[in-house]
Length: 172
Image 1 (cartoon, rainbow, N blue to C red):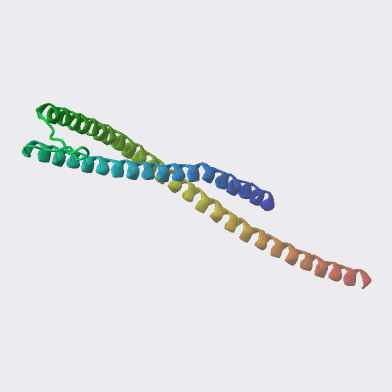
Image 2: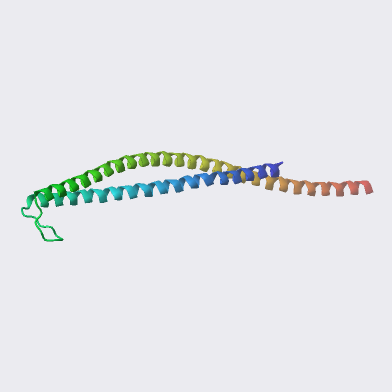
């Protein structure tokens, strides 16, 4: 009976090991989310730097008089300055919109990450408790099996001694 219980507990341990597979997948998903967040934050920093560069170019362009085209060396007129300013302003707005979108995505991913991390923590705690309990039962059953086998051996020895005594009595 004890050996049968031990087999059942070993089956439970295998089942717990199987339950660990989805937990490992969740851990991997968590790492991937962290990597995505780092990438988005890096991208946002880069876009902020690009906006700063555009602002510097705009300031430089608007404060200089008689600006010349760096390619053809001709003077850029008022219309050309307006066109360049419009292009830079549009690029700046586009990057600002991208930053806002990035911030929303980062916030969502951080929320998802927290939720996933909480779930992982909860599952790990429960799994560890189940493993500890099952391993404790395994140890207890193994000890009971050893004690039962020792008692069986003692019983066999006692029966053997009893048989010898009965045989001597029968001879007398």
